[in-house]
Length: 298
Length: 283
Image 1 (cartoon, each protein chain N blue to C red):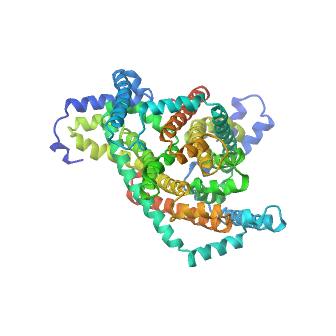
Image 2 (cartoon, rainbow over the protein chains, first blue to last red):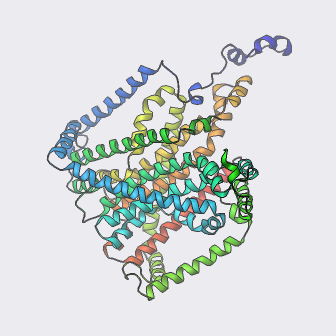
């Protein structure tokens, strides 16, 4: 930015105020937006103040609304009642048993859904004709909100574990399938030509080019599948009238009894759980897909 | 890549694959199949095959009648459902809930995204909080909201809004950071103001991503509205589904699945058309 050096002789007209200001203080590039992760120290304490202030405000408002009488305390619970509810769930109710029951189903549905998604995605990616034949059907399934199948599964499979697994699997296999398909097709034509010039076999093209190129994308799909499997199991548990175990069942039962302190406690636990799942997955992603950053920064 | 010399020479299939993947690369995913028409006809032929297999499975009693109703029964059910007196009311109610929550969620998501994209402080402060809320399966919120707002349409809209905010918010935030260093330098060299950089560079760069987020938001809003209708409602397509479920009326449930498929694909196509007009520079 050495415009001030040449603007005098190259541009006859004097600079307007606006231009003057811009020359004096060139518009700042939003470094934060361009660089990730942001190496900024200055806002280090400020953002903690903001976040703590926000959380304190939320808790305060949550406490004030029922206390003043803006909302019936039965409906909104209070922070202290929620904490007490959580403690009582852990100590008297067997929250841990419900938790393990739900998570077991989430992981079972997730694993089966991911395997199905990967196999279908691979087949569709490597045999383009099949993809073109099935595209209309895939689009139709994709545009269907798959949750509407849950009542159908419950009618078919009853109140047992099968209807929950079926719901989880059908909801969660799609992201993995689509990302596998798109990822395996992502290598540039040039790279494929190179592999061909090197006389690579189909397996080698797959193993050395397509799979490494696809894995970062597949991992994103798998992560979505995990969260959707969670959603699927919870949805089935909330909709199932006859089930008696699982965290979703607790939400349904307690909301029917309008025990909002307990509902809030379970929802808080579920939020913490999903955050932990995402964090664990991101960590795993960094470990396994170690080449991701190189790929993207290029 | 040292052990490549052991590989067999490329086969004709490899050539075909390579040509096709090149073509698929150059054209959009949707357009890929339009070029060579024959797989389309195969896929059209598949429809009567599926229907035939369905009817055969019914006649041969492969599955129980409750699991697999007669195909003609499903069609009959569908016609009965769609021509029923109350159907337009239920359909419009679900559609209204979806569209309103999608619109409101998009606006809120956009505002949140713009705020956080332009303020590093807010971004660092609120990203973990919003991330936590994004990760939460929204279905568990539906019972709470229904207790608060009742069985009417407002609880459906509230659930839908909560589900629709996050996709738009996240894609707005990411989209606004997509600008490359070179483009930014050019804007700087042209002495663009912050506002100009935003309107002429960052927003156009972000729009395709934001539109992608709006499409996802339509899907998540639909799911949330339907789930809320499942949990408790006095009208709407989800309510009809639950009713059919408690009557073990499987053919009616199938008919409703087809209605949902129509709803989903028409909103998808509508957004696709708007996107082509609005984000015309996107390939």
